[in-house]
Image 1 (spheres, rainbow, N blue to C red):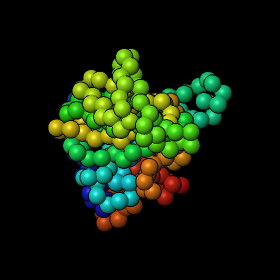
Image 2 (image 1 turned 180 degrees about the vertical axis):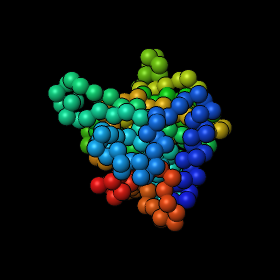
Image 3 (image 1 turned 90 degrees about the vertical axis):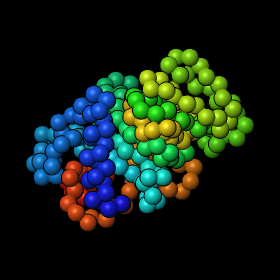
Image 4 (image 1 turned 30 degrees about the vertical axis):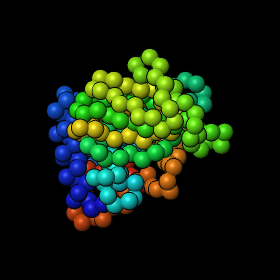
Length: 228
């Protein structure tokens, strides 16, 4: 993805998020220079990988296959092992109309996916088999705001604004927005996008970036290169 395109997506996403009354934290608007200057006193931003995240899954067709995310808060796996501390994470995301977030599952993360507003959020769901792959026959059972919904393998769950689904580790899911763009909330156990995403297809989690202009704001995938 071109950095100029990423900058435009950030601007558009910020306006879309604000239109629903959701206000981003202050660090969201720090410049790259400010991020570098706050490296020591704001180290949790970098170690927990908080911030902007825009991906085309390395496929170069963001409008068809992609997702906008911003990680607002995130704990540590070390605390999960101890069973105490910050054991949770929160993201705000945008799925554009008919833009696919591809089929994947998580080994560790449990998550609530929430339609915060816009169109319908459509999820395609499968259970996992004994080896962790997709079970093409097993019925899918998931709680939607506390009420169990049962679907056939590969069934489509459609969430209206205000509705949410709980996905436990191992549940395969892909999703997209129907009708119009959707603002998505995610509340989960600790999130690790470096190791805890298992995709059905051999694709990448982060975008390759063509630095045609300077970054408006750094992405979480920029931190190692730009901050160290």
